[in-house]
Image (cartoon, rainbow, N blue to C red; front, side):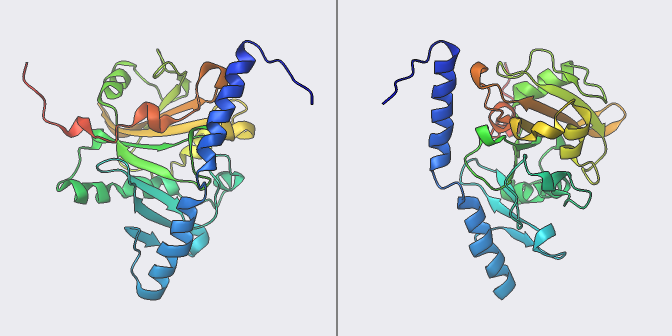
Length: 259
């Protein structure tokens, strides 16, 4: 048996890899099995999407998606393709005929509204996709939940422009790139392509990125902030925008406490 001595940063990298593998050891196909073996068949057989809240396959399963209430968080939902799509690293997401998953995820905030009992403020919402290092499931899923209140304040002060640039200060010690886009919805925006086409070499390395979309209002009208971070295991960055950006307790919806 050969014993290899690993020192310094290599030790940290090895430990981080073990943690990541341990996370993936828990059924990495759980979401896919729920959608593929329960939600879609139930919808096809009886027009009942349970345990999902919705199944949309009007243009076929290859273009469809399901909405599932996550077990974590008071309002969090997941948008999950009804086709087999591994995650942000899948080349299927950059094809010209790729489904507009982000637009569908934004439109799905109606499910959060229903659960909350009233419409959520636009400024409370955030959508995220984690990198393979920062997720437990090997089926694409977009987290639809609330934004961290402190992060919203940071972004408002950052004067984010319409082109990708470094976000001053990063988030939680992780380097992020940011850009703004205008529009009431995400129809036709295709954030995966904006990442692949707007950041040098990102197209060839999509699997190392995490992506977030945060709704806001600019002086000129409604829009969104896009945030992207690249995994850096030695720096402890697993590229999980969900953990950096979202607050599944939705504290942003709590009434302000008078001083």
